[in-house]
Amino acid sequence: MAKQNRNQLKEEPTPGCYIKARYVVTIMAALGSVNLYLLRNPLNIALISMVGVSNSSVNGENQNETASLLATAVVCPQYQANSTTDEHVFQYQEGEFDWSLAKQGLLLSCYWYGYTVSNIPGAWLAQRFGIRITLGVTSLLSAMLTFFVPVAARLSFSFLVALRITMGLLQGVTLPTIMQSIGIWSPPCENTRHVALSFTGVACGNVVAFTFAGIIISYFGWECSFYVAGGIGCLWSIVWFLLIHDTPLKHPRISKQESSYITESLSDAASVEGKRASFKTVPWRKILTSKPYWSTVVPHLAENWTFAITHSWVPQYIANVLGFSIENVGILSSLPYGLNVFSLLASGFLSDFILIKTKIRKTLLRKVYFRKNPKKSMRFNLASKYVKLVYLQVFTTIGMGGTVLSYLVLPSFGCNHTLAIVLLCTSYMFVGCNYAGYRVALVDMAASYSGILYSISNAMTCVMILFATQIVGFMLGDGSLPYWRTVFYVTSAISAFGLLVFLWFGTCELQPWAKSKEKQVGNDQELAFLEKTEDI
Image (cartoon, rainbow, N blue to C red; front, top):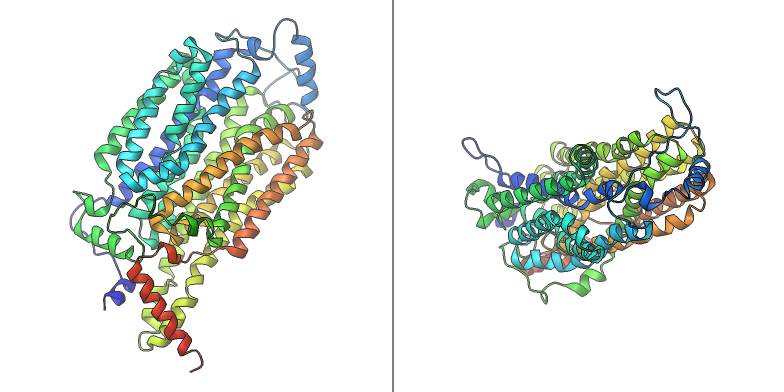
């Protein structure tokens, strides 16, 4: 009877004006993603003012050489919106720090070394000590360190590198902990919307960080960009501590109706009672040898190759190949992230709408069509596990397929500024659909270990970003259009490979190693019964 009630589970309405606690967690997680990028990205823009053009790549002795190089790099006519001249204008400004381009590259990349190392340990910390203390403490510490970036820069370059590595170590915990919070707080039928909402901050954070960092620096100086980011980070951490709790059972203000709905809907998964796993209890071997899990890792790696291109190299393509002015590069570079937010939210809610409103979920189909035939119901239960997978495959196809087609077609349009910008936007815009695709499968297959699963995958993608950025630099050669075509074709092929792997091997079934022992025994008995009655 208990099993039947779970299959027909429906949330009871809470009387009065009540904001659901799980949505508070999701909104705070989304703001946490924004906070991550606000703390990470100001240095990318501030370096322009900190170093200055004359100290980094252009000085009095090589101005003519640099002008010649830039004129050669721009292979398309310069885009002129309201200008009467077609000449390049060079502005030289003196910077406070005399750092070479090699040093600047080290300063930007050293963050990722710390970030990569802390992903898996961070997920284990969230599993062991809870999401509240893990994310709250690490975010607060990284926000406080952000205040000291100007001081560290003036003291020593080595000191600033050490500070950036430490910030990466602290912030590598963020996304795995957010993924863990979804596994704890989201009912399975709402996973797509909570994943989509939580990760809107990834796109919004880039848009907000790049846009406002430029404005703050231009009006108040580069130091203020770090002070503002650090202040916002501290404020978010305090609110996180005040509003968020580790599990529904530990939340003092959650309604009994919502708490019961969440815990009962997650009763199939292990550790839903709030027990914290130790390092030894995590099924590491089964996770690392799980084919369904690796079917989500491969598209994640492919997606982050695209991220590396969009984040690091698309601005240079817009400036040096398409010939847009520097004033427009920042805005145009942020457009893919802004459009990504809309596709992310739309796909997440659309997926849940289809699964719930059209009544194709497993439990509703069993209730309507197979109530009187238990044997037929159990057979249909197994078959209907693939229904949601179809939708995950559809959204993954849109997300990865959009990148494949955009980068495949982009080289054909050469110097058509408008179509080139449109295709650059669509190449990353549709990536948001992946949050209703293979990323949801990651939560569905092991809700209780979703943070650890994501941390392993995210650690590998960080390495991918590091290598992709450097490899593309070598692939571009002299920066002419044929080299860019090669980069775009390779990106399209990598995305296509990631898509095919998920379509062939992907699943959204709760894996045996992620189930509670009692539930796993029940499923084994059900499968045995079906095998005995197969020929009847």
